[in-house]
Structure formats: structure tokens, C-alpha cells
Picture 1 (tube, one colour):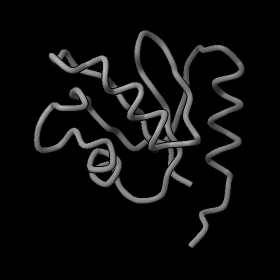
Picture 2 (picture 1 turned 90 degrees about the vertical axis):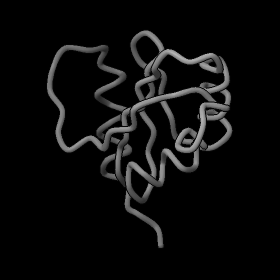
Picture 3 (picture 1 turned 120 degrees about the vertical axis):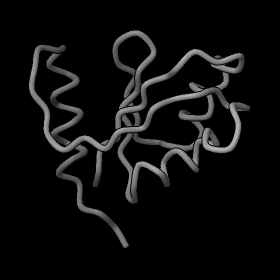
Length: 92
């Protein structure tokens, strides 16, 4: 399973992004000040398309980045979530 970081950007509809993430990605984790991690198959573009943030900002605006590696200082629960979901087999 791939892990994607979603980094919200200023937008008139920024408040709609979090509910869209919650509804679209059952495996998610809120991090930092408004950022999210989601586990999904596919590409960063496909994740952005699912969030409907590509053609307009009706669900807000965000950067979607596929995580290739990780390192740093964070709450241990974040590292555990990443490890668990990164190692989850991709179905399909």
C-alpha cells in the first residue's frame, strides 16, 4: 500500500478538504496543523482526482505527495501508523 501526504493550501473552500478525505479514504491519519496521511493504491494524481481538487477548488486545494521514505521526530503513533499501512499488502 502506498502512503500519501496531503498538504492543504489556502483556498476559499479549505474547510471542505477534511470531510472529503474522511469520506474518501478510510485509512487516514491527521497530522500536524491540517496535514493528512492516507493509505491508498494508485498514484498521487489518482488520489488528487479522488479528492476532486484537480480541476477546481470546490473541495479546497492541496498538494498530494507519495511518500518514498520517512525520517524525523514525531509522535510514535505516527511512525506506527506509517509502518502498519506501508506494510499492508495491496489488494487487486
